[in-house]
Image (cartoon, rainbow, N blue to C red; front, side, top):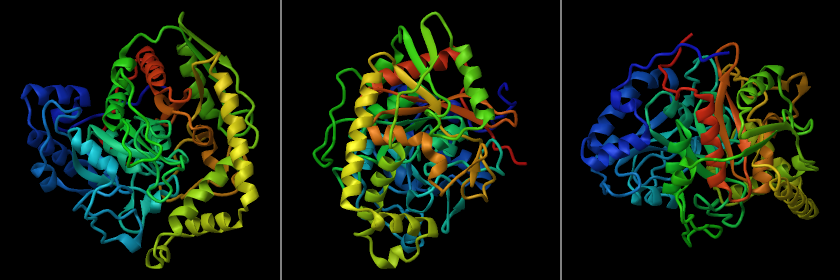
Length: 472
């Protein structure tokens, strides 16, 4: 289906790309306060319909300083409500932290502020980031701007919606089981899960683990690359921190991609359940990409025990957080989180060792795959958005889902193998909902992945998402 007819009634500044606004800031043609005013005006327009930026902090943003020659030059940004911002209510979406106001910012927030980002608000997330539908007992549900009856996925749902509606130019996300990729897919924007260590580190309590990562979300690929540059670089505060490349991700993304070799799999060899509707949209997009320098073939390497490896990694993360969280907070956790903890306690040391073996096997398989292909393309999610009241699908394409994790199986591979993965908007369902194509790149291959994604984005020539919420 072609893109539905949409409107954008927000301030003109809000419609510009992040890179164009940064250029205006550097030239002195707009000020940080001009951008804050425009962004807050847009929030007033759309927040009642979508509930994405749940804790704006305009006074703090106006008081912040940012050098014009810094990476972001004073650009207002959003921070997911899982990362502390000094002096700003940070709830993690859980009742036990409803009134929490941190006295210090998360290291990634400090980095972004040091590089010219101005935090203008916290974006909504499900409780503790668990679950791919953004709702919680404090702020309620975030709604999909393409149809406000539907969900925006999660856990970076607020971030994705803030971009699609033009409330913010760049918004921070994080990803373990697709928490950044799924909302990007459902909202028609770009989200990149980087390789572990590229954009900071992991949990402060499990600093050497690499399942969960922070990453950039933006309206298009070049803005996403620009935001990744602002996040990237070594810092000893993160044990797995990795140096930034000599050539910026933004500059690499802009270069000619040359010959691009794509392998497409609709279901990861039957591992992931996908509706014919989603597969059709993705195949139509790929058919349009069969250009002289782009080859597309149906292929997927063998990925044994991917499910077991992902679930073990996730159990470790949940237990690591739970063990250092006071009972006054954990007693409020929703049933799905309590179920995760039960699963974690049932794991054995042998299970974790086997999972590490499985991860090594899958990584080695993918490393060999990238000798002959640039990206592995597959769905981000196997079905279109569901009504916001539905926490998670109980079946996909006729296949029953065992739990709320099962329907996220397309996210597992990048997480388990530590690979960068990007959600690129490529089309729409017959009902007018966005569909993204997941592109998985080689280890620490963010530059090439962004370059390929930018090339495909240009070839498809889809307009950047800017939308007034469609209220039905």
